[in-house]
Image 1: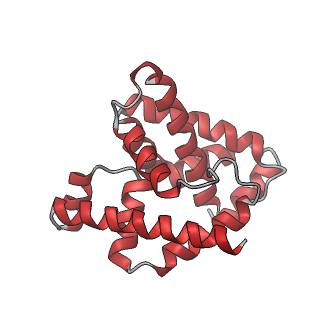
Image 2: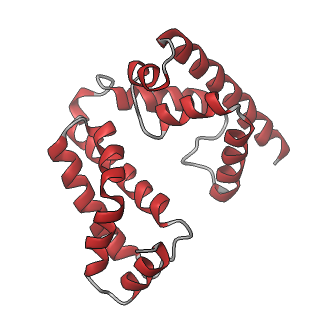
Length: 186
């Protein structure tokens, strides 16, 4: 079933849309959630919560890219779940490390959460990603979107862990520079 048909079913409040969403994107969403939560049961629960969130948000939302819309909800749900489950163990897991790495790159006078101009930030960030060479962009996204570990990235791409670490370090530095330049031009 095509995405526009799925969105139409959601607008019609047809519950079959949720089953179709799970059939079409369930494996992808499971991968996103499991990379964050590292638990099959938690990932499955997260997907159920995300499907409910999609049901509640469409309508009125009409996403341009249903797969990314769903993946974003799954990812945010999984991160929230992870934070809740690890509230007393701050800094002990890979998610906190990832968030710290990115917040260090984005550090400045403004925080990402405090920016009023979220759309401009998104456009700037997407422009930054497009400017990266393919391998560098792939490594960055595998780490910070799909939340894979350095060894997992190295294995998936058939490169050494040290290359992954150096690439991530350099990309974060480029991102920091990019965001500082962006702030100076606004």
